[in-house]
Length: 291
Image (cartoon, rainbow, N blue to C red; front, side, top):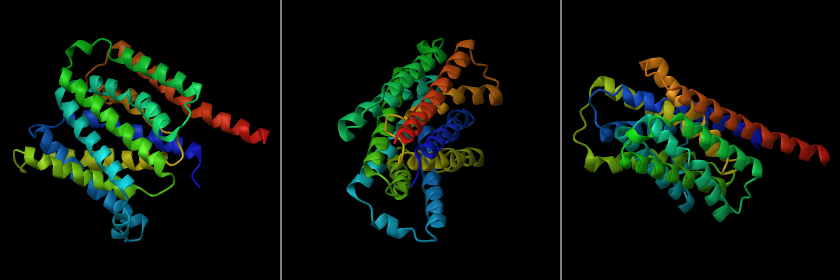
């Protein structure tokens, strides 16, 4: 049985993996958004197939044959999140995209209450408010530069990811890696009508596959595992390490120096994540001690 604390570690680590996506997109030279999304989604699908094969000793098909309607909802929601996220990164600043994605904890909390009747503890609300404040400070100097369509894409991505998390929570301890993998194939198929062609440079192909396998692949494997033991409102909150770290990678690797407000806001987000991750664990320990 997976513990809550292990789920927290999975969620926080997922944010670390996912935080490099914005940086990687900025290194794309000539491939357009649909080509990047296609190869990213396809490599994500292949990565999770390999993970399933290793985990299940080569038995992959039974997992797909056992898919239920709930699993298909997970696949469609995650595929939508993939698509809207990449479209947002190509339409506006990375900082603006992660700002809108920070709405995820609020959306997941509301959906979790409506669908699962999960009570959102007041400490979780405190952490979410602090986190959204931190993200607001992070991008306060650049809000006017983003395109409206980029904000809309990011908000739709946040909604899609929140739906996925809530449905995963509803599925309980079931193994939904196959449903997660299917999302990559669904997203890749969706891209086909919009592709200007399959030919891209080796450089762009490598980066797109790196995003799909190492960054998004491992990131969503960890989110899927975290959702087994962490409430719906907390998974996207803990994964906000992505929001705090994304501007740092851009700073270090392409010398895009962040504003002081970005650094201060990122620190506040990390404090909120640490607070959420420790507060509930301490509360669980206190409850066990009283029993």
